[in-house]
Image: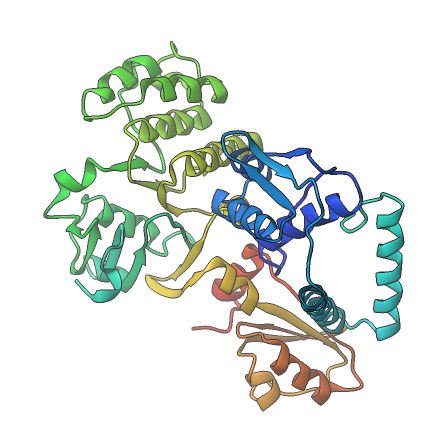
Length: 132
Length: 306
C-alpha cells in the first residue's frame, strides 16, 4: 500500500511521508490504526531504516502520527490542529514543490490546476491516487 | 590523521596501491562515519577490491593509509579486525565443514557471539545447517558469510560485492537481512557493489571510483538532488559552454533525432529556469536519474569525464 521509488529525485523519506499522508487523507489509514514499525517498513521497502525513521519523525512532529512508547506508532486520533498561519505556510511549501515539478516536466499551468482538482476529488472518493 | 577523518569508523587518506608498474588506486581519500552505509561503486578493475584489501589489513598501502577506528589497518590489524565483520566477494571456508561447525569454530574467535542470530538468519535464508560448505550454492555461501559476519555484532560491516552472481531472490533476501541489521543495531557499512538497484535505497553515501581515482564522494540525497537529465526538442540550443547550460555543469550533451539531452550534475531550480528561458520556445524537460543512470553518466565509455 506504500511504495517508494529510490530512483526518484525526491528523497525517499519525503516519498514515505507523502505516501502516509495520502493514505491518511484518503481514509485507507484511519485514526488510531497502527502503522508498520520502522524495521518492518524498511525491510519491506528495502530502504535504509534511518530514512523510514526520518519520515516517521516528520509525521510525528506534524501531529499526524503518534508514538506510544512500547506499543508502536499509530495514526493520531485527532487531526493535527494548526494555526491559520502555519497551515498557510505548509500549503505554500507544498504548492511550491508541485509548481516546480510541473514546470520542470514541461506542464502548463492549466494542466497543473486540473490535476490538482482531480487529486482532490480522488481523495474525497477514497482512492489513493498518485502512483500507478 | 586529518581533521576530516577524525572519529570516522573507516577512512582512507591519500591511499595509493600499485601492482608492479600498474597503479590500481591513486591518492584516494574518503571517510565513513558511524551509522553510515557507504556504497563504493566502480567498474571491474577500478580499484574497489584493492581498497577493501587495504582496509582489511591484507595489503600494505604504497602511499597514504587505510584506517579503522583511527587505527592503521596494516600495523594494527589485530585489534581493528576484532571489531569488523567481513563478507568477501567469494567466501572461502574449509569445504568439509557445515554451517553449524563453521559457526562453532568462528564463535571461539570472538569475545561476543550471537549464536541465536546465526541460527535464525540461516533459517530465514534457508541455508541447510548440515551440508558441507563446499556443496552449498554460491548464494548460500554468501548468506552464510553474512550470518557469520554479523554474529560477533561488529561495529562495522565490510562487504565486497556480496551479491555478485546471486539470483534476484537471493539478492533481495540478502539486502533485506542487511536492512534488518541496520534497524536493529545501526551497524556502519562499507560495501562495494555492482548491484546499483539493490543498494539505491539503502546507501546513505556514495563513492564512484574510476581507474583508481575517486570521481565522486557524496551523500545520496545530495547526489539525487543535483543530477538530472535535461532534454529539449530540436537540435538548436546552447553549446555545452553557454552560460545558462554551463551553470548546471553538464557531464555530457547528446543530440539525437528527437532533440538534445544533457546529463547535468549541478541542477538547481533557478539555473534551470534561466535555461528554459534561453531555449524558448523549445519544450524543456528535466527528469531524475536512477543510481545506475548516474553511474553510467559518470564512468560509461562515452561519459565526458576523462
